[in-house]
Image (cartoon, rainbow, N blue to C red; front, side, top):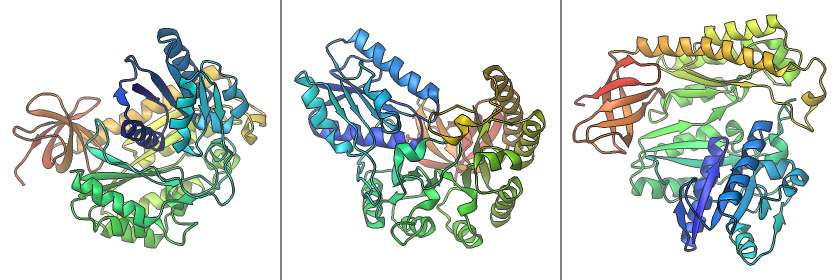
Length: 431
């Protein structure tokens, strides 16, 4: 039996797909690519935007059209957040959400016998973190570890609390055990992911900084990277302890959403633009400037005036992010912002996306060029030839490295060359 996965959305979804793939493999399935023939097709959905829901439905329709005898599965955030709508997607033979993922094998077995299965368990207050440990990551030289799930915040635009439930944390002992196994398997870099990563430990009496410090003591792990962080959850002490942890990559994905305080307030974010900037300044000071920042920004939020949008653009330019993901606001049923007045037309959102992304990309190119001639370590990832590899620096700058005699998975010091608009050229140097 062959199973194929199609994944939308964040690193948490990517991690969960890997865990589900391992579950299938351990039970006799062979993994197929997303465009290859299979007996079972699984869509792990993202519902942050309406476009994500649409892509999930389109992929299911295509799979059913090409392989009508196959079993199709719709799982993830879309069914969890919108169970009735997802259950009505008749191209899916199995519909299940984010809870009780281990039931997927039994549900698929029922579908193979001809039964249509809708199994969407509701999130409950006090539910435990569902363990889905990983042994290896197909096609990846870095390991992604999900350490936290859920979010207790109620941002005006966001449907994720409905899709993911309340904050719940994985036990530190379980994480460290998996880290040791991954190190023994040869992984040198790990990425901690979560729906609201800095809230790790709020339900268990620990915190993310302690997890980072203890993880850095695992022999064989050379680099730790963090997923998205909420700026208001980083205290001065947290920043100081992070800076003292040498294995922690000094690249921080600080969630922004808007560089305009008035817009942030309508979004029901809990920080101002100036408070965000203050956290950035503190991190830069702690790392003597040797750190980088990435973020996400929403444009076209209800009521965003041209002046507010311009303020957000200026803020993004002033912070000097290494990379910015720009999204048009997506109206999601059941969120407060869906009923806000002064909704922005789609064509205007598209115009603003283009303006902000262009401005952010100009900053990215300038920062990359300023690094020309410097040396940073690079995790060698995909081999392009016997001597060339793609990879990322500690600052999360994408590079193509000339490294004769090296192998994927190694971490090497490299001298950075010119930026070509997508990657820096780099050459491995003797340590």
